[in-house]
Image (cartoon, rainbow, N blue to C red; front, top):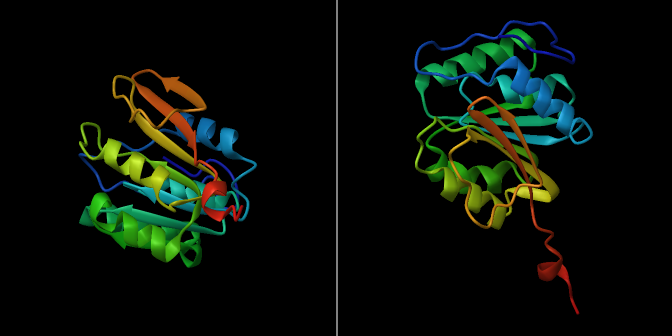
Length: 188
């Protein structure tokens, strides 16, 4: 696994080992080709970050900041090591914790985000609640995009209607956009 493009192109990324399903180069390439206009100067959130490969790819391609949320000690260590090896640590924030428990705080302290990438362990029961929470709260900036990597057979919440989907074997990327906040800010 390596950084595909940008300032850290070609730098190998370390994985903490067994039990992790890193996002493949092919999926990351498709993801960033789809989001290329949003990435420069973006605030990027990588949930269930694992090795940090997706957020690091965003930083390498010009994102202003990436916040990585991961619960495993091995994953947190890998993210910090990968940020140091790519020389992108000054623009990365690593937050330990379980996503449902820390999501509101992360959105409040570091958001709103231009792009949020969610790739939970397959079989994670919290996925529908996390997706719904991001779309309903202020986790996404106006025009922000939420991308969910999930098994093809897993359905997103009914309110989460993707504007685009890409399939890679048994894996799907679903692209969703935050609803405009015009109703809240409209004075009359």
